Image (cartoon, rainbow, N blue to C red; front, side):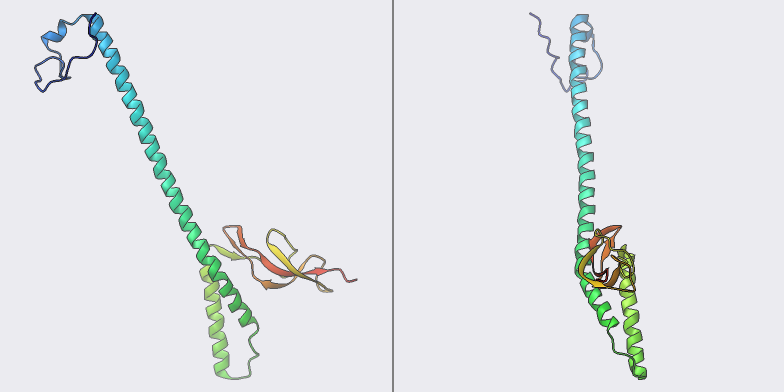
Amino acid sequence: MTDTSPPPLTDNPAEPGNGQGRGAADQSEPAGERCENCAKLESAAEDFKAGWQRARADYMNLLKEVEQEKSEWASWSKLHIIEEFIPVYDNFKKAFAHRPAPNGDKYWHNWAEGVGFIMKQFGDVLKSHEIEEIKTVGDPFNPERHETVAEEESDEYPEHAIIREVDGGYMLKGKVIRAAKVVVAKKKE
């Protein structure tokens, strides 16, 4: 029975089986054995190559997955901060909408104008982060964007139209993050 395992590797480049070149001793191997060894080595090389390619593909997939998770985490963090920020903005808008009428005092006028600029700046910051306010008053009720808190009879608005906004609604990149709380018109009885 003939040993078909490859010859051992050595440090001496002149010795056969070192993986570098073919010496005279290699030429004495029967052609069939050498081809059988070549086939085994080629098969092993293909196995190692396939394993390396799988490992590389797994690594590339891992990089994509990590990048996706980082992106999702950043979006979630942004959304979480915005969700805490929006009620403050809503309360600010409500307070500004119910400010007392100007009494002719120059300082009062300047104060009200300054607070109005702050409110506008607040809204601009939200817009810069792709947050948009949901339109309400006068628009038809849309259950995907609005939440009804009351119904009132109205001569001014058609049935199911929004009469008044109680709390603002907001969307991030077209997705509702908070539905607007509204009062809806109903038919007079």
